[in-house]
Figure 1 (cartoon, rainbow over the protein chains, first blue to last red):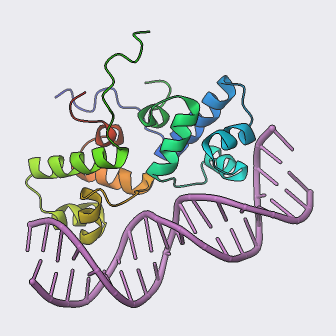
Figure 2: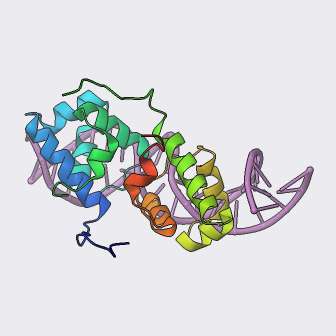
Length: 81
Length: 81
DNA sequence: TTGTGACTTAAAGTCCGTG
DNA sequence: TCACGGACTTTAAGTCACA
């Protein structure tokens, strides 16, 4: 086993999620409110997720992934892999 | 883009997680209680997660992944990819 | 358009037990 | 060893007024 090979310092999951959501949302030219509406969540809730303030559950993760058109795994995977 | 090509009906995330945890735990020869102790969660909780009854949070996901020696992404990825 | 504090309600997660 | 239940505590979900 190539020991611990290419591991990065590894941001927290929550931080990775926050960055990915914000980036993907911007890519799609959406406001927080538009994204929130699309996935049936509240604007301020999406905002707090993007700020890494929430320990989200799988169900919220699924809603966000669906609204952004990506997989849950993509949402949790750091950009520069 | 190979359009939607190899996509399976896609089990629920929670179901996939449940299966993966149980499989990995068995692979390691652990009881639910041993796994629970290792990750600092409760035995009854781990049991209910394995039964697919829980909407786990990212932090619990991280604890379980760490205790099983896999990544969070692996926990959420269906076996037969 | 977004951040934030304060808030209520729903569910995550614990702990006791039983078969 | 595990499934399951009931009672419980803690925290995420979800909303709002305001900057």
